[in-house]
Amino acid sequence: MSLTDRSLDVLATFTPDHPTRTLQEISRESGLPLTTTHRIVTDLVAWGALERTRSGRIQVGLRLWRVASLAPRGLGLREVALPYMEDLFVATGENVQLAVREQCEAVFVERLTGRRSVTVLTRVGDHFALHATGVGLVLLAHAPDEILQEVLSRPLRTWTDHTISDPDQLRAVLAEVRRTGVAVSDRQVTDDAVSVACPIRDAHGDVVAALSLVVRHGSVSPASLIPALRAASRGISRALGAPTPDFRQAETA
Amino acid sequence: MSLTDRSLDVLATFTPDHPTRTLQEISRESGLPLTTTHRIVTDLVAWGALERTRSGRIQVGLRLWRVASLAPRGLGLREVALPYMEDLFVATGENVQLAVREQCEAVFVERLTGRRSVTVLTRVGDHFALHATGVGLVLLAHAPDEILQEVLSRPLRTWTDHTISDPDQLRAVLAEVRRTGVAVSDRQVTDDAVSVACPIRDAHGDVVAALSLVVRHGSVSPASLIPALRAASRGISRALGAPTPDFRQAETA
DNA sequence: GCCCTCCTTCCGCTGAGTGGAAGCGTAGCG
DNA sequence: CGCTACGCTTCCACTCAGCGGAAGGAGGGC
Image 1 (spheres, protein in one colour):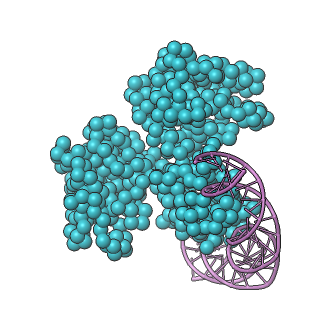
Image 2: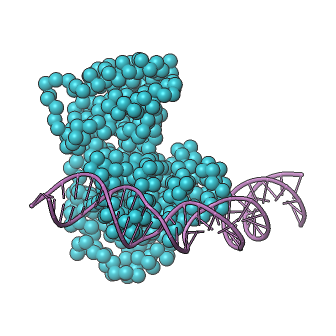
């Protein structure tokens, strides 16, 4: 294993539940000897990828965040999408989420949360299974076949009684998402939330992200959200250079 | 130079002006031989810290962004501050900025931009000189002495005729910022923008960030923005566990 | 004062990492 | 179609950066 891999594995020991760690914790989590961990952490701190807190704990440093903020699929996408997400947020007052796919998971790049909106579990930077969320279903529907195969190589995790767990049902849902251009996740993650999602395409026409609205079950018809959601996702797609599909027909595969 | 340093220096070659690069560009920017660069990039891509685009160019990867998003001084601070920034934004309709200090520069962690607001130069993740911006003046006023000494060890850069360039003037301004708890940057960065900034404190009472409003020169009195700005910065400070200062007197050093 | 936990430093050893050269692939131009 | 330029990938003899257990120091709690 190269030293670059080891350094990155040190960085990967931080999680939303453990944004700060001791040297010993990092050593245990990464599987590296204490001395090796100490040396790597010292280098990362000197560069600014990690920082030490007043009490000696270790946390991800601002310099790493600044470098990572240049990720086109992270803040780069967010910057393009934000005006449209704000429009959607103002128009609906509901949670708006933007996600991209990383391997077999949806990663949330941005979200706008209303004060009175239904609570959503995910934060910016978090990831979630593809098969259960609106954005995840969109991303999976347009992913290469091997991604679906990998998702289906393990039992589908469930969070509620509504979570899709049958592979055949998932395949059927994905076909429908490709046909209609819209995914609906009805109480698959929590018992009170429904999300509606649309694809965002790039200049090649590839689906590179998904946009969704998340509302309280029963508060509003998901179908009524589709026009505004579609308008926003098309706007973002255009901003990314996507060719404009024929406006007269629903989005098709 | 350690391999960790080299790998980080590869990552550091990406800039807002060059979010994607070729292998040769990275080699030139980092000063590393092509073979060494190739090996390091291959490792970084395999891990997810970098990604290759369709055309073979290299960009910062989503996995690095996810790790970096755990930086408490980055998105961690942003998450705490966002509701107060939104309140301030709704109340004033002006640009709201949140910045932290990294060595001798202000790094912008979040900003809310109004459609009709004056244009601000900085994006999330960007940095700017401390002495010229509202947030920078606040951060510098409360920085260790050696930071001010380092800032003053080089001529102060100017952007407009109003930019502070005299060290004695800067020291006087910083003393006033400490006394009043507010910094005003009047047309120091662009000829049409004025910013007003306040400190944000942590549980130890240390200044860890600054919050500002940026308005069009002449559009509104900076003094009229201070109450709302103070309220928001105090709210964020409280959320970070800061002790509550006596409400009857202006914030003092 | 003792114990526990965490962190830092030492140092002989070795294989991971080095980088110039050569070769391959692709695009553009005449 | 052939040539040129640019970018990328692989080879391989060499070397020193990185290895990690042990020992010791620091700090907190009882």
